[in-house]
Length: 402
Image (cartoon, rainbow, N blue to C red; front, side, top):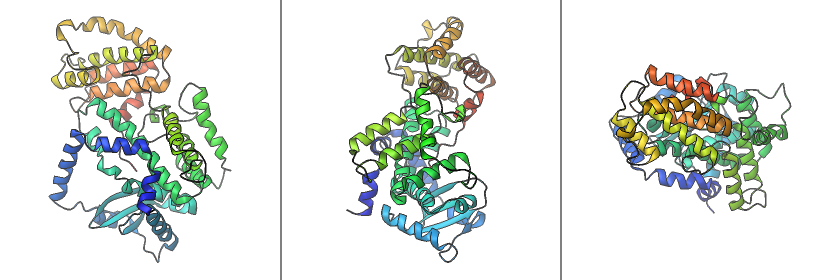
């Protein structure tokens, strides 16, 4: 079997299925066409910027880094020349940039290259190359979510897909590293910022955070900022849990079937992706009722509900569900506090945050959020005990895969 086939074999099934569906979405197609037109108007100049802001590592300067890059590229069927860059930063970070003039670029922070051992570096390198091999950058999530008035259901699907895309990239990295302990250490270092010189890493203790999250009814892990909970990247202990399932599957050294692996991964990530728009539980109903009232009150905060806001509302609740003649905003405002209380009493913190995030989508319907709209969002967030900082992150988060 070819290296490219091996890479596709280890790809997360949910990522593959959602990517295929998203690439056929009209909004995704339209945004990609717009990006292509901009690229045709002139070169992106990625290599020029990298040469100006970072140091290109030649094979003579960094032979081991190039050896890992070559071996990872061969294992994943990269099939394109690779240039390696480093930039000065105390933060552990890496990125793979869109190809230009037939070359692919991968960049590491100086602190990461100095603190990560061979297997840890191979994981990070394979992860970044995995994003390229799996064509994740062809789903322009950043352009869509930051470009104004995204379809709410498309926005939710993009957030979900992004997490599964990270799982695929993690698997590519683990496949390159062939060392689950080293992979776990790499994720621990990325999550903690520690180099490992002052602590003794325990994969079992790190994974215990996932079990604690389940015990606490899907509350965020101890020490994890709540405002980071609904990011596009899975919380690191969840990623280790998903990678441990991968390592125990027939795709690596274990006996578990691929089907069991994918079901297990979906169960792990379900801690981050509560669904309520079609759910029939009391919790889902409470969440929908708050979203219904909150979205209309946010939209009307400046005294007028625009056509764009109506369109977004109906994308959540169905066509022709907005009826101006039957709309009683005073009654909804009076009902807001009880509906907030119902969610606080019945839903977990991540579920409450899901409602706040969806309300932020409504607030962005006209490419900006007024002070009056923000005040309504703050009231709801305070009532749900969701940090106000989460509203800012939901409005303007870094959503590109890395």
